[in-house]
Image 1 (cartoon, rainbow, N blue to C red):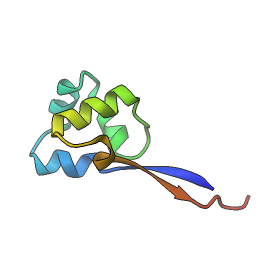
Image 2 (image 1 turned 120 degrees about the horizontal axis):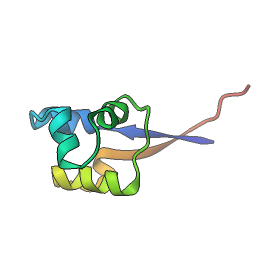
Image 3 (image 1 turned 90 degrees about the horizontal axis):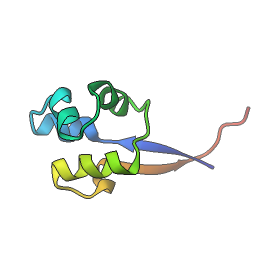
Image 4 (image 1 turned 60 degrees about the vertical axis):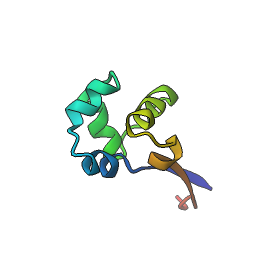
Length: 74
């Protein structure tokens, strides 16, 4: 079994009408980091995940979750 990080960041950000740039500013990271998070190309540090959750006032697990998936045979 393997796992996949599920990120709902874009949903929370868009619901607030917040730009990627503004979220990056509020969490002291680069806009490119937010882009990569939303595309599923980057796993956040615990600190960044915490900071993002704080911006939206929700638990980390509401934005980031880890789903078990079966490993495909090679």
